[in-house]
Length: 147
Image (cartoon, rainbow, N blue to C red):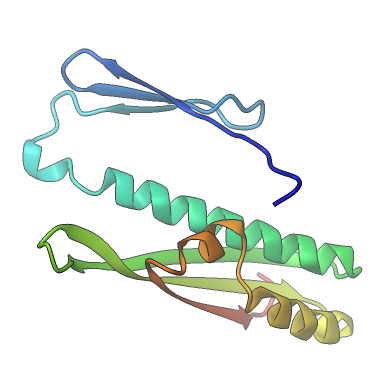
């Protein structure tokens, strides 16, 4: 890779039940997780949800950029990411598969652009193609009526 870029985030434990992840972004505040008063059995899944959020954001924003670059007007775009967890051969819990669903509303005049963008997205986005050797990733893009 000739155009290597380096990124970093920071982590800080705050007391017994708090965590702060510094992102260093103007458009996104640092993430703060505070488990104070939350029972232990309700604390799981934070890292999994952050990974899903990262994959969903990356996939959706890449898709939106593909549409906009080709002149499409996006009337609405929503999405959902889910995953299935299991155990690997060493009995460690891991994410086995991930599913990303996008729902896009566009005018009929942009239908051909939508199909082109869907084809481009078969390659995924930075996050999803970086994970695909470790996690089975499935995605679906559906056209919906504007709200």
